[in-house]
Structure formats: structure tokens, C-alpha cells
Image 1 (cartoon, helix red, strand yellow):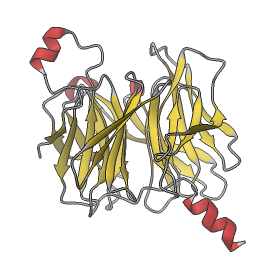
Image 2 (cartoon, rainbow, N blue to C red; image 1 turned 30 degrees about the vertical axis):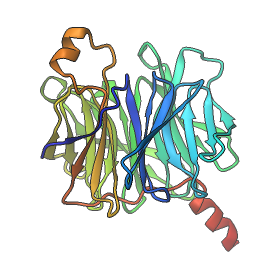
Image 3 (cartoon, rainbow, N blue to C red; image 1 turned 90 degrees about the vertical axis):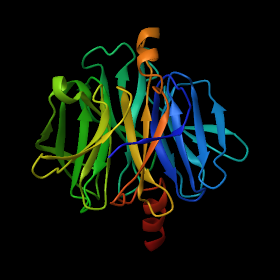
Length: 300
């Protein structure tokens, strides 16, 4: 399969792709551009919001607004008024660190990783933000915290720390949020296909991994570790991917032009743009912040 250009965003570091189910639109961030953008599925129009902080993660709130993970913590963003309020602060005392990838677990908790902006080894962590908005450090000594998804049966969590070249599997306790390392499920050869970055899951339980300097998004079986398919892209720095569209059967892909010189940009001029592919499989359900938590509270 080959990806097609969706929008010529020319971002420095496009990341955090999100299909917003209520607005029927595709969101993504430009981390170093301190902004996020929305592509309207019906009108094909694009809107941009500028921020004072580096955003890295977008999560749909159950009320239709956004949760934004960014340098300094987690915030609620009202898409109508553009008002933002902090929900919790994170690593404010480590100015060289910023947030990176993450997600919302089946119970509506926010998980988000941090990393050193100069990529210093082991300076980041993976956190779980509980419903009381208190962060709990789950994994320490993380270098570049990236892809994070949960298995369809909600019994496992899969996590990428990019420099390890691995996807690690953890046993996941849905009720408590506790994790226990189980095994390395995928090992990727950097010289052959780049480094694992952002990740999502399809409705068959297979993983789709954007591979930095790998010119593509690769499909893996998390049980066997086998690489099953590849989506080709005309740019090297493929950063993340997310399913979306009306039937949840399109894959949205973000890319970057970070640290590329003029010669590299000339060679790969579409770097930093967002791409799309019509898939033959649908995406797994993505959890909204607050959805499961509020439903559970109402049942009590």
C-alpha cells in the first residue's frame, strides 16, 4: 500500500494524530511549532491553534472538547471558546523535559510519556494520570516515550521506548491501572526499517507502527512478532498514525522535517506533511477521556 498526501502542513514535528468522532475531523499537533491543527472531513478546511507550550498528545474528551498533553502537564481545551485550563502539572521541575506520546486506557485514565528535548538517555518516564488528576510514574528511565496501546481484550498494554528498538508487552489490570512487564513482543532492525515511533491498533488486534527513518507504517502481529504489511511513504521521518474517517477505515499518518537540512528537504519535499490511506481493515475503538469513568460513577 502507498499513502497519499492529505494536507501540505509542512510541520516541523507533526505528531499526536487523533480522529475526533463528534466533530468528524482529524486533529494533529506540531510539537516544535507549538500548535495543533484540525482537518474537517466534510469541508476539507484546516484550522490551526497556536499555543504557548509544546503539545504532543491529543485526546477527545467525552464532552467533545480536547485533552492536550504538553510540556508542563495536561490541560483541558475548549474548542469553542479557545479557553485552556490545566488539569495537572507534570515535571515542571525538569525544564529540559517535555511530554511525548500517550493515550487513554479502557477506564478513561490518561497515560503519557516524557523525554529529554536533547534525547538524553533515560531522562523520561511513563505516567498514568488517574481520575483525581494525580500522576503516577509507571515506568522510569525512559529515553523517548512513544507508541502506547491496549489489546482488544484489555488485558495487555503495549509500549515503545524508541531507542530500544522494541515493543514491550505488559500485563494490564483494567480496574487498578497496574502493569507488569511480560515480554518483548517485537524487535525492529534499525538499519533495515528505522525506529519504532507512534502506534495504533486495528480491529483485528494487529499493531500499526510508524517507523522513523523507515519510510513507512508497518503492520505487526503482537502475538508472533511477525511483520505482516507495510504502507509506503515518500518521506523518511514517519512519526505516528491513527485510524479514523466515517467508517474508521482510513489511516491518518503524521511526518516530520525535524533536523533536516536543505538538501534533505529538497530530496524529500513532502516531509512534515500529513498523509492518508484507505484501509481494508477498521481501527480499534479509541477511548475518550471521562467516558468510562463517568459511566462507572453513574452505575454506583
